[in-house]
Image (cartoon, rainbow, N blue to C red; front, top):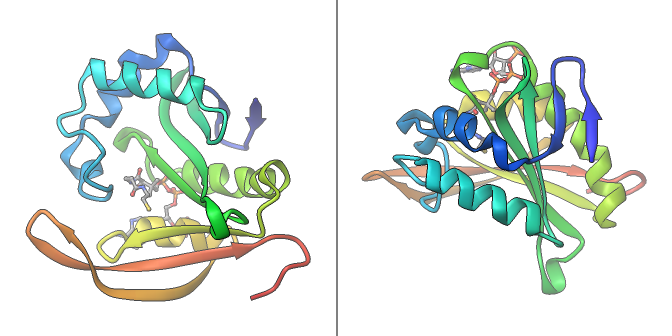
Length: 175
Ligand SMILES: CC(C)(COP(=O)(O)OP(=O)(O)OC[C@H]1O[C@@H](n2cnc3c(N)ncnc32)[C@H](O)[C@@H]1OP(=O)(O)O)[C@@H](O)C(=O)NCCC(=O)NCCS
């Protein structure tokens, strides 16, 4: 799949993206905003494993965010299961060197409608740590509403944080 945004190309991951992914994702500041499953340090082997998982996934959608000819970040959609199967989560990250140019906003805004269409979901949501205002801003600019604050839900690096849940509903579906 390929989606052209005003600032990047969203495309399938390729094995040759491993080096740039490892370089950009190996950041304690990025890891601080992610769940603990996100490796830190982030090695070339981690990047290779992720790309293999991404390429082989039949249920989730993982796309690289290509900027200036290299994979500078990633964005993904992960449908939930069981009674939650009309809901999916969106996640993304971008190299620190590419921040502040609207790239993540463009990516989320472009992928959201595709996610509703492809997965037949009615809810697209993101759980943002309260320490991450940039991500909240991205979601707000893409039509996500702040739905709930799960107080003290996150234990990250010795700190209690709130989880702020943002949601966007599919066409014709309201809250
Ligand atoms: C979240 C992330 C993807 C944003 O990337 P980005 O390309 O810089 O985002 P954009 O440029 O599209 O937009 C960022 C917005 O946040 C704003 N912002 C940035 N830092 C901010 C801060 N500390 N406080 C408030 N707003 C902030 C910017 O001004 C911008 O808003 P604007 O367009 O209205 O000016 C990037 O910071 C990242 O990869 N973080 C680590 C991973 C992560 O947090 N993933 C999301 C987990 S829920």
